[in-house]
Length: 340
Image 1 (spheres, rainbow, N blue to C red):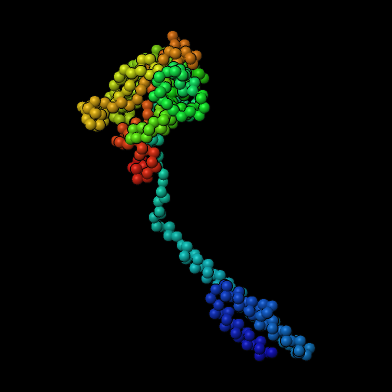
Image 2: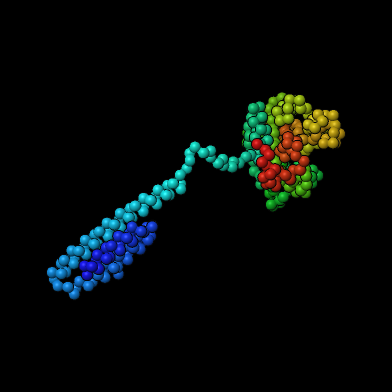
């Protein structure tokens, strides 16, 4: 039995020294010291020995067990340290190397230009207000001098939710909310989405964006309107930009005008882009109709005002020479990455 213990000790030393990883070392621990291990099997034979022999063999067996446990623990510590060093070496980061620049988002061209328009008007003392996109027929049409049987409604055929609720066709509805709840002087713009049942093509979409402007105060005239729009266009397109006003009709303004901006392609000389006109139609404007003022509780004999509504997509297309509105809504990164 003594010889068996010596053989187990020698084999254990060699096996423990040769263990390549912690898993094989744990397997070796079980094979040597487990309930069915080699040392345990030898100890079970001690019942055949005399009392003196059992004492001597027991002492030797404990020495062998203690030595194997020490060897196993030392080897385990060495393997764990080696594994940790290997992992640290594999995960080492060279802090002197340049980092990988993460991809960053950027603003949509519609948002870029809208932000510029906001800043221009804020600089002129305007406030930015918002209004509901799901609107009552009253605010979208009737309060703007468009009764139910008015023919101008046909050009703004829209998306109705009920007979009295619809998706707004213009941000002009916001000016009614403002005039009902605030007293003059008023100076606001209202950017937002609007909806019309237009067929999709290069210049039309059932969803687009407008920026409504409204000024109400004592002594407001068409000259104030022209000066405001002229400054806006010069800030957007350059100091040499010019505008012109053409007579038009809008039910909620009187007098009304279509506002054209000088063609940035030919600078007024006439070209293919402007169809030889020298100017490109950009927005509608006019003096707020007295009936609209009175309907909102504002005395039209004391106060006057002007309003305008410009299509944001149209401004963006002019700004960046974009020929097809649909490009603005297709989420094509090859197109959108051009704008900063």
